[in-house]
Image 1: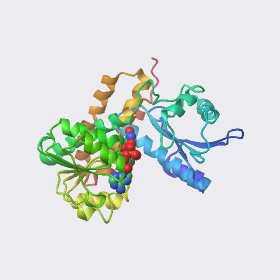
Image 2: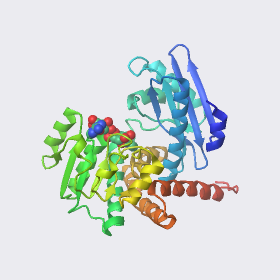
Image 3: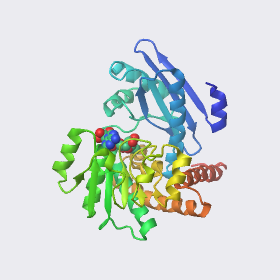
Image 4: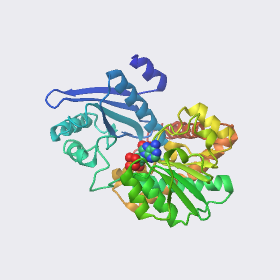
Length: 356
Ligand code: NAD
């Protein structure tokens, strides 16, 4: 892989490889852009087949974090760490303390958190060796209810854009995935008096949990979720669920949920949804509630302040929908334009020296 060529093309700042022989720790931290503030992004543990695969993953994920933080109105840049290893075998106190020491060497340019296959418990070990870790159990805690809350506000903004009215009452929803975020989202929608909610799941335990918790919510088989005659389809499971096969089935007016990388091919499927007149709520904007919540740990955590900031996802989406209309582009692209513009303008504001 031509790393410097890739870094130059996409404006990366730093790529760090680290290794600890005793624990088998093998990792890569990427800092994409720190124009707005320190790079924040979780640590993913994955059994990558090749080093190039891990490198490309960390590069892509870090860049995604730059746009996510920028669009969320945070003073944060984008970064990420990937650890190469089998999650069933490598984890130990020493392994994560080793990681913490490498995070500390970056001296605050990068802040880590939990991600796929790493937990708040693992981050407690990381925290023994570094100040630069968030998402700790005794601070902001589980991000999922906050991610779902952000999606709830995002759905309201999307209803406002499509129907001129953001009330949930009287509207119908199809939720794909009732794990951590889907469960909370269903709860918020019911509380706001949604007329009808369908959900789908592949995990039997989660199906039983939702049926018991919310008996009024109707289960449908996974393949039937796309073609339901509802106002909103809320993807809260996997990525790439908006693709050549699924988009033609949609009867909804809005696609808005918590899942990452919903569009299989951003350009192609962003445009397909636009052409079909279906409003797509850009994933990295609508699902930023969890990130906004951990960001508040850096400021001294206060739940109310965090929830107030999460509610601003509503206004941010309205701005993005306006850009999409004015630039005649799909909403995912408009969200990137919005994020890049904020990075550019805030960098300019900060160009002069001011003593604080
Ligand atoms: P989760 O694993 O708790 O829940 C996902 C659920 O989807 C699981 O219950 C799983 O069984 C179900 N599922 C998987 N494939 C399915 C299919 N084909 N049909 C129906 N159900 C299916 O995950 P989560 O934390 O709720 O996250 C959901 C999505 O939101 C992911 O894409 C994640 O990356 C994204 N996200 C989560 C957070 C967060 O705070 N948890 C933040 C930002 C983005």
